[in-house]
Structures are given as C-alpha cells and as structure tokens.
Length: 474
Ligand SMILES: Cc1ncc(COP(=O)(O)O)c(C=O)c1O
Image (cartoon, rainbow, N blue to C red; front, side, top):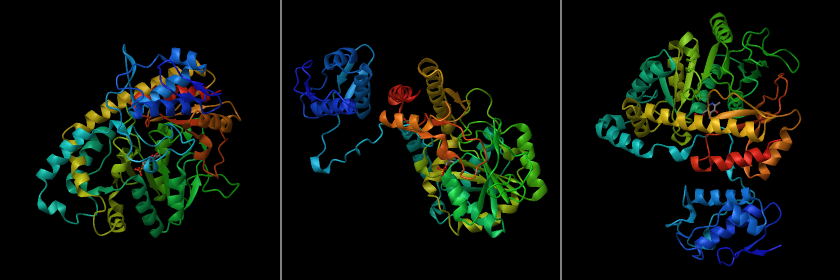
C-alpha cells in the first residue's frame, strides 16, 4: 500500500510493506534531498515519530537514516537530531550515467579481510611521502634491488624485531606485493626444490590453498581440535581417508599468533613441535602473521620465527594495519633461502619505490606505531560492542577468537549456519559462514558459525551494521 508521508509536508510516496521498506524509505529521502524538496538544514522527525506515522518498525527508519548519514545526505548530531546536510553530495550529471547499486547488494560488509579504509591515515601518509621523496637520492628511482628498497628493509628489520620479536636483518628481508605474492614466490621455490605437499590448517583462505595448488603443490590439512591446529600429532599427509599430519610435507603454512579464522593462538607446545619437525626433516614453516599488530587483552604473542629463524619464514603485510590496496608485504627469510627467493622474484624490484620509501618513513617517524595504536583502540571498541550486543540480543550465540584481530567467530546452534547466512543477506549484510573457510579434505568435525569481520564498516555505520547482524542471529 503506497503512503504519502506528510510529516515533513513533502510529497513522498512510500511502499511501507514487504522486504523493501527500508530501501524504499532510503530512496525516497535521498531523492527528496537531491531534488531540493528537503532543503539543507531541515530537521527530520525522530525515528520513533516517523516510524509511527508510516506504521513501520523504528529500526527500519533508524537504518535508513544511518545509510543516508553514511552517504553524506544527512547529518546526525547529539542534541540536534537528524538533519539534511548543508552540502549534500552533488547530484550526478545524468540519470543514465549514474552507477546503480545492484539490487540486493549488501549495505554492510562484515566479510573478514579488509580494515576500515575510511581511517587510512591519509594526511600522515602524504606528509611521509613528501619527506621520503625529498630525501631520496636519484638512484633510488632506478630498477632497484629485487629484495626491495634497502631503506624499507632496514626500517622493517628494526620494527619487526621490536614489535614482533622477529630475528632478521635487512639482507634477509624481501619486500613483496602482498602476502599472496610472497606465498606464490615461496611456492615456486618449494616446487623447484622438489617439495610436493604443503601442510595447511583445516580452516583458512581457499585463495591461499589454490595458489599453492596452482604451483603444483598438494595441500594437506592438519587436524584441528578445540586447542587449534594440531602440529604435534602423528601421521603424514593423508589420502582421502588417512590421517593428516606433518610427516612428508615439504612445508607447513600456519597462522600461529591468531589462527585464521578460528582465532586460537598456537599453544607453546605445538609451536615447539612444529619447529622440531622443521629441524628434523628440513621442512619449512611459513608463518602468516597477517594481523600480528592487533591483540587486545594480553601482551602480543611473539612471532614463531623468533624460535628458529633458520627454519621459519615470517610473512607480514600492510593489508590489515594500513590498507590492502597498498600491496605491501614482507618476508623474513632463513639465510639458506635468500638467493633462491630473490632469483624467483625476478631481476628488478616489483614494488613501487615511492610507496616503499613512504612506508619506511612512516615507520621510522613513529607514525606507523601511532596509527596502529589508534586502530587497535578503535577495533577493540567495536569488538566490545559486538560482545555486548550479543549478550543482550543473542545470548545463545557465543563469540570466540576475540582476543585479537579484526574478526570474531560466532558459534551457532548445530545445523543453523545456512539459515543464519540467509537471514543476514535479508538484512543487507555481507557475511560468511565458517563452512567456506574449511579445507575440503579436512577431517575436523564441522562446526556451525559465522565469521564476522568488524574491521571494514566505517565507524559511523558500525552500530547499524551490528543491529542488522543481531536481527539475523537466532
Ligand atoms: C589469513 C590472511 N593472510 C594474509 C592476508 C593478507 O593478504 P595480502 O597481503 O595478500 O593482502 C589476509 C588478508 O585478508 C588474510 O586474511
């Protein structure tokens, strides 16, 4: 049933029924602001009043307002309510040229992997870029050392030793375009050395498994229990029915500080066991320290590489701490691997020197530490809000893996994962079930859970995203 919304004295026809109520309301309001029917500064009715006028849920109005605040059409201030923004976004040039959101495209992105891009430290980064380029000698603009710019490798060696307990030096560091680039290079080196299998965790990113498999390596999932990945169990890479284990693998890929996505750290006994395995067999441990900077409740767990720099390759990335679009990551290599990895990377450096020099300046000036500290505080608040919202609205759902990182695993009643993922889609939420992170050959008991990334939404939409998530939970 169409309704004319008279509260503001504007001619807005809404369709306050069915699944599209919120979208209809958001669209009508946006259109009214865009065309000037709602003048800049106009105060909108409270969500309670408007919801009562329209006969719809108050949350629907609040969500529509929050969407429009996020888009810049409205502003919301404590004490002065929700108003039409003074300088609303410029109207697009032509209707036909306007990019449209795909019908049903999610409003909130809770897929783990991306940090809050709105809080990228643009001003500090630009200042660092200016200082770095001013100071760089002309020769820095040449093809460069394939391992990456020495100024960055020196800054990283100091930073990683201080913050993550990594034992390395600039000669053994190689800069790469993201963790995945580094993993691809290592896969080629392993294959060339004759390795045929890489042990991986039962839960992880399929993109990484595919990358190894495309290089000709078999991925063999390790067992997983309530204490995380089992690196101290018997057995080698299993067949379809056999036990999985480390024996016979040429390398093992692990996320020891914060298992992705389950969140458990590798226990001290299992850390020692995997290092023993590497020493005994000559195998390599590939340590993915993707979110090592973000630990909230305790002292960060030091890098596994610190236990044995001759057998562990440490891989870090700027993708969570700054932005994945930078495509900047680094590997601290055992001495025996440096030559092969450098040769496999290619004859010239593959990462832009300006970004490398900027990151070096960002680190040495202290801006990186300041940025990480501020980001840690922001994400910690989000995590705390998530835990409180669950306690209040979904007490059956238990969040795990929350001591660190930018995501949480919400354990669901058995058999409910597909329905909850579907319910989240109805709430315009992009979120993944745990099943999609499970290795196809894993023998671990399947679990029902949601993997909720709380890094991606900008601060001002986080509360709305959280409300929508709670509505989708059992
Ligand atoms: C488990 C894990 N490892 C590594 C990365 C970083 O990958 P990259 O540096 O290629 O962006 C991510 C990013 O999402 C991740 O989730």
